[in-house]
Image 1: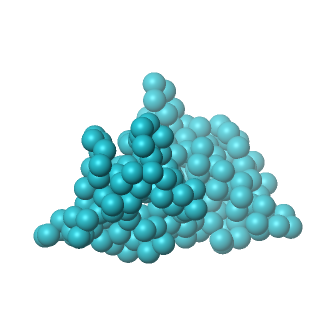
Image 2: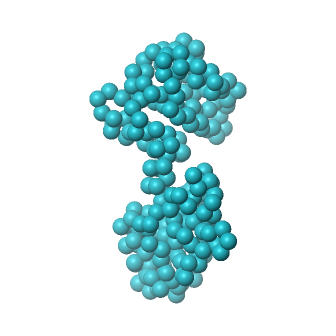
Image 3: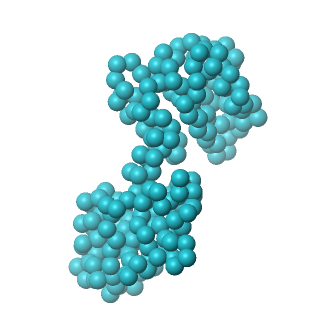
Amino acid sequence: MTALDLISDIIPPLKTSDSGTRALSFMNEFHVSHLPIVNNKQFLGLIGEDDIIDLNEPDEPIGNHSLSLVKPYVNENQHIYEVIKVVNELKLTIVPVLSVKEKQYLGCITLDRLVAFFGKLNSTAEPGGIIMLSINQNDYSLSEISRIVESNDARLLSVQTLMPPNSTKMIVNIKVNKTDISHILATFERFEYEVSAYYHESDHLDQLKDRYDSLMHYLNV
């Protein structure tokens, strides 16, 4: 999956002739805090909500102001994980995508598109249970985790790991294809794994999805 595959056609780019007031209106309408400024497919940079608020004359064209615009972007053929890296490092709500050769603006990727992609990648819509383990980094073994799950006649649907800063432990978030995960939890505890949290589907799949989305947000995936 590359950046080109996740471009959203919803967010309109700004032109230098657009006013700061118009930009704020777009941001409010599309629930973003950044917008690209593009003239004739040339990406000039991202303007943020704070940049516009600081303008002395927000009703004047953006091009009339002296702005120090950041110019983060990804190329159309870069892996989606590179998009995640840019979002996380710069705390962006959109990521511009440029063509490889001409460096022309092709569109942008929104956080909503990223969440939807990872929802599919991590089998969010599939029935099952979610288990979050806290493991010493030196003790992590995906093969052993998989063996424990499979020993309970279940299988792994997805696995994510997180290395918290200044910690010798890592968080391992797994989703399995069983809604009743009590036996799997008991096996992990028998093998002295620390289960930090777990979520299992009972009557409502939507409730599980909401909890899962909250967990993904917490893990900054």
